[in-house]
Length: 339
Image (cartoon, rainbow, N blue to C red; front, side, top):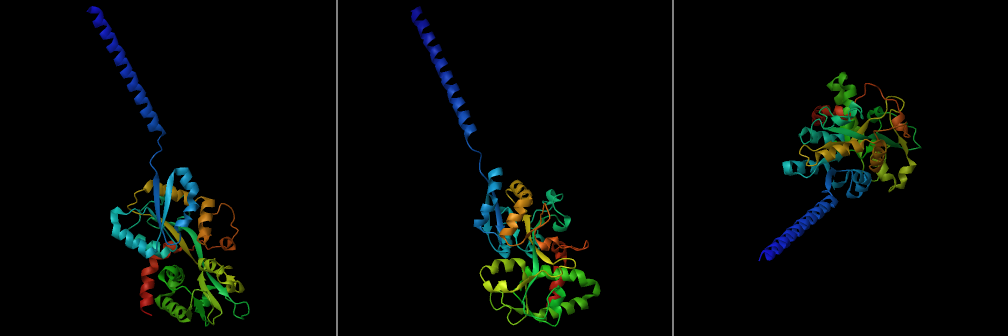
């Protein structure tokens, strides 16, 4: 009887050892599987009126380095603002990249951007290209240019020619395209008084002839006033544009006037940290050049002297970028309404 009890105790001891060993193996395997499992995929959603889903390929290195999937939502600037207003705190848009200062300033005015989110780039980027509230930055230049005929006696060289006695054709009609230009002029001549500004505006609107189509035709005038990005996007389609001279006005003075593509982080961004990483990535020299080239403008970051004559042009130290000049938009609107 005693031998049987001993045998029973020994067998139970072996059983518990086996169970304990089995539990250890299971726990070890479970830990190993958990360690090998990839981390949850991170995302970043960018709403843009100048990039499309196909342009996500521009950010492959960013995705590879940070394991963050970049998604581009191609949508107009007006629709971006409407979407953010509708979605509120539930929005899945993390950041915005738009082609014009006017549109980004409007979104900022509606308090839809994360204030002070641009502080991280103050050492990388001139304060001239950062908004007062530090809620958006300019990432590239889009100069206002002339296309002129070769066989004309009239030489278009300066923006002052737009208010001369000559008419010009232009495809610039929206606030998005024109307000950054108006604000630059307003900033330069406002000391002369409102009457002088109104006179300039009246003459400009009088001389400006709308284009009849999207082919950048002169329509009987000697000059076409447009943005550099418009010219770049159309020249491959319309071969007649090669017959015209491309002129960067004020080249011998303070440099051309320009619009800017802008970037900002949404106030309710779900992936704020990812957006901050992307912000720093945008301002890497070769990245900034690659992105701005894609949307047919000039890079704002240049590690070495730029190959573009536009960016080698001297600028007055007192010149203010359209980002800070957006404060004049309200006064410009009043002027136009009174003409």
